[in-house]
Every structure is written in C-alpha cells, then in structure tokens.
Amino acid sequence: MRTPLLLLLSAGLFTASVCHAWSAADDERDRQRSMASMRVNTAQFELNQARMMQNMQKSWAQNSAASRQDMSGGYQRSYSSSMPAYNAVGQLSNTLGSIRDRMNKPVSAMRIQEKAETDADVLKRFTEAANGGNHVSAVWVGKMYYSGYGAARDDAKAAQWFKRAAEMGNPDGAYHYGYMRMYGHGVAADPADAVGWYQRAAEGGSARGELSYASALIAGNGIARNETLAVPMMKSLVARNMQLSSDPDIREAQALMAGLLGDFYRSGTGVSKDINEAVRWYSLAAERGDRFAARDLAKMYYQGDGVGKDLKQFLAWTAKAAELGHPEAQANLGLMLVQGKDLPKDVSTGIKLVQTAANQGDGFAWSLVGGFHQDGLLPKSPAQAAQAYQQAVTKGYPEARFFLTPALLRTALIEPEASAVAKDQQDAQAGHALAMLRLADRYADGIGVAEDLAQALLWYGKAADRGNAVAQGMYGLLLITGQAGVKDVKKGITQNERAAAAGDAGAMFNMGELYANGFFGADNAKAHATEWFQKAWKAGHAGAEQVLASLTAN
Image (cartoon, rainbow, N blue to C red; front, side, top):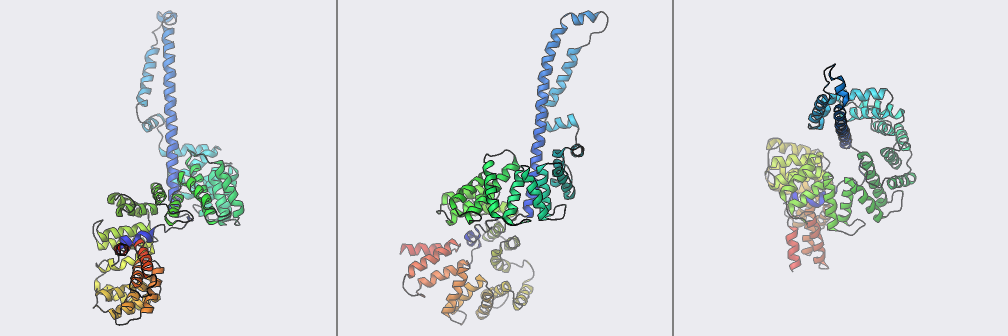
C-alpha cells in the first residue's frame, strides 16, 4: 500500500532548478515590493513633517518668552492709552494649542488635516512636478501606475513615465523602462532595446540596472552571451555594495548578484568551479534576503553536493529560506515538523507551513496537503485529497499523479463509478498511460470491475511499456510472484530495476526483498538488501524502516 505522506518526503525535496526563471508571480511580488517601498517613503515624509512641526513649536515657544519679556516693558504701555492692547500672548497660545492637538493625532490624520491630500492629489502633485522637469517625480508617477499605489494599475502609463524619467537622465527610470520592454508590460516586448536601457541605467549607477545588464549578458537575452564579461562585472558590483543597504532596491540587487555568483561558482559558469566560493556567495545572498540562495545552501548540505552532509546546516538554511518565504523550503520544513524527523514534532506548525507554501502555488506542498487529508492530519476526505493532488499536478509537481488513482477510486469525486470505469477503459484503449494504470488498479483490487489479476497484469504491462514507474513496479512484482498466472522472474526483476531507478519507493522495497530472498545469489545479499531498503525508507516507504531494524538486529 502506498503511503503518500511518507513517499513525498524525499521525492519532493528541492524540486526546483538552481536557476530561477522570472515568472508572473515574481512580477506581482515586484509590484507589491514597489508599493511597500513607496508607503515607507511616504511615511518617512510625514514623519519629517511632524518633526518640522515640533521644531516650529519649540521656536514659537522661545519667541513667546521673548515677546512676554518685551511686553512687560514700555512698548505695550506707550500705546495703552490710545488703542486696545493686542493680546499677542493669547493669540500665540491658541496657535500652539492647535499645533499640539495635531501633534497628538496619528501622522496620517495630521497629513490629512494639514494637506487635505487624497491619493488623487498626491498623483496630481507628482505629475505636475514631473511635467515641470522633475525626473524623480516622473519615476514616482511611473511607480504609482505600475504598483497601483494611489492610482489604478496601468502598465502603459507606467512605461510612458519611466521612459520620460529616463530621457531626463534618471537611471532608475531607465532601469524600470528597460524592465517593461524586456517583459512586454505596457509596451511591446523587445529584449534588445531593453538591454540598451539596462546598460544606460547601469552607467548611471542604478544597482538594479547593473544587475539586469549583467544578467542579460549571462543569459544572452537581447545581447550576445558573454559570461567572461558578465562575471567580473558582477563581482565588482557586489564588492562595491557589500554593506547592507537600507534601500530595498539596492539590498535586493545585492542579494540577486551574490546569488548569481554562487550559481556561477557552483556550476563553473564563466569562472573555475569552486564550491567554497559558491557557499560564500550564497551565504552573502541569503543574509540579504535571497530565498533561493538559502534554499540552495540547504540543498547542498542535505545532499552532500560538494560539501559534507550536515544536518545542522541543512536545518538552519531550510529555516532561513522558509522565513524568507521560499515555498519549497516552507513545505520541506513543515513536513519535517509534522513527522518529527530531525526536529521536535510540531504537527500544527508544520501543517500551517505546508498550507502557506501551497497557497503560494507550490506543487509539492499541494501534494502534502493531499497526503494530510488522506491520512487524517487534516479532516479525512478522499475528495479533498484528490483535489489537492490535482492542484499539485497543475502547479508543476507531476509525481502527485501517482496518488490520484487511489484517492479518486475511493470516492465518486468526478463522476459516477460506472462512467469512470468506462472512461478509464476508453482512455486506456486510446493509449493513455495513467488510464492504463488506473484500469490495472481497478482489476487488481476489484474496484468498479470484477477482480481479475490477468487483466491487471495486462494493463500494468501496457502502462509499464509507456514508462510509468508505478506500473513497472507492479508489473514486475506480479511477474516475479506469478500471482497473475504468468511467472517470469528475470523480466520482473528488470521491470523493478527500471521502476526503482525512476524513484518508485515500492520498487526499491521490492528490490530489497529480492536480494534478501536470494534472487540474485548469496554474495553480499544482506548488504545489497540493506542498501535497497535504506533507499526505500528515504523515499518514504512505510514498511522499510521496520525491515531495516530487523536486519540490523540480526
């Protein structure tokens, strides 16, 4: 019996590639980060205004004291007989009282009272300043349209304002316009033109412009690929920006540059391969908020990839990546907490981490959610488990399709059972491997059809021929045991070897059983059996740990 939750542990760890491709989710994150940055800048502006008011209050208080001193002399008395005394002290007191009232209110309330500015007013003010030649204001107007801060999102208008800022000599405007050109936001996509704007931004001192230009050289995107030129440029950029910056744009650029250098040294791209340098750059990147660098460090220490396997380092960097919001790391950390594997068991926290990762669209996390529903850690529901597995496949974790069969067959999730059987038969006849596997499972377990191991063998074999690892393992097992009326040990072993090589935990366990029972002879049988049981255990096979304990005891 397959155990989804356990099987997913090793199958899902670190499924993403080393190089991260920019996605729509990254674009949305960039827009949100831009909006957050503008909020911070606005709040700082308002705080500065509040401090200015405080300084004015002190100044007026000092002037008040001086005025009182003057009024006690002849100045007021000399006019007292000819006109009513002007109560300067009272007027000043009223003014100070009004200021104190405003200072005791929240800054946002003070801003509204002092300026009576709506978001539309702010946009108007920046637009007027930009039209008057203020290039910084032009960038702000572009960002407002790009992020939706104070204006409805409008990529076309954002691109226009970024270009105007760039043409006025603003390097950040050049970077932003290059970005819009690279990805076709509000303007036609044109990588070659985008690189020209990135270069212009880089020459003007924009950190993100420098990063983007170097990245284009590395990828050969819009410009001839030139890693030899790009890598020294990247190293120089990071060396000039080693100190952690309070500016989120610069800090993000630092992190991305250091992370890319880690990738280069790890793979030997444009430099001599050097794992120690890769670890150093990844560490710098992670400290500056690069969740991918933290994830890559965790992966290296988990797999012993160029470094010694180190559980402590693996856990530390996984926790860091999860803290920085990397969904894969959140899912891995959550699963370890649920299982109590290498960490104190904390099911509640672990499930929350996995759900957080799933909500970010991580396919592996969705598979875990399916396992939780199937195993009862979340409300036990085959229907919800199947829905989660379907989400996992949709979100880029194809291994979850192996769990769809048992979940769907335990419930009439999609359609009545008779219709489901007919559809599986139709799809299997049409050559769909997963339908063949589902049909074979039906015949093997008597679900929706009469139990028929001969038919199960037939359809497992057809699915196996199409490369389905689960089917290969089941086909091999039936051939080895002869339960279906056909016995072919040699062919069965070959099928199991293929399935095990493809990562099927059940097939790994079967290989251990074969060695343990002497199918390959007595030489080193126990050692080979132990090796396969360990592989099966690491891949999540539920019974492998108990068998290993028994072998060790003997």
